[in-house]
Image (cartoon, rainbow, N blue to C red; front, side, top):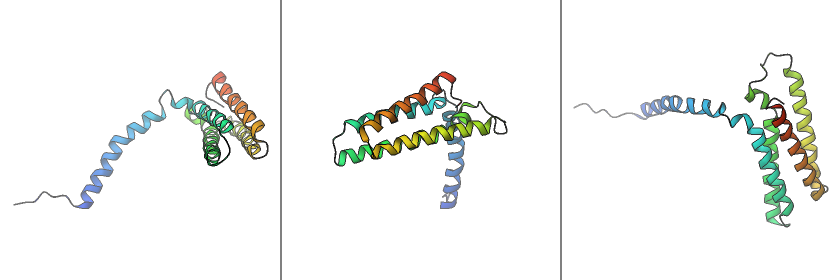
Length: 148
């Protein structure tokens, strides 16, 4: 009798092939979905909520946890600032508009980071200013479309 048992290598190869067949289209659909174009706006909303929660959280461990969450959400906003034009598909990589758009994204990210750094100096005022800046970023994306 022939045993049709698969070896570990056979199972690994089958798993790798099935992962590519199944996960490839899923990732492609997620990248080009209608909500993917507004990842920056969704990230900004999350960061504004984190700013509000941080402001209302009393001092102690809860405040430290809220500050870590605020920092994480602000880093995500900064990351998405540099991806907006690529996700929107509005600027080809070899376009002459690419460099000024990246420079503008860097300036916005720098202003955002400076506002975040002020949270340690004057927390109440800085959290309000940070939320205001984030809402301005989201408003700019919504008015012009996700092009940065």
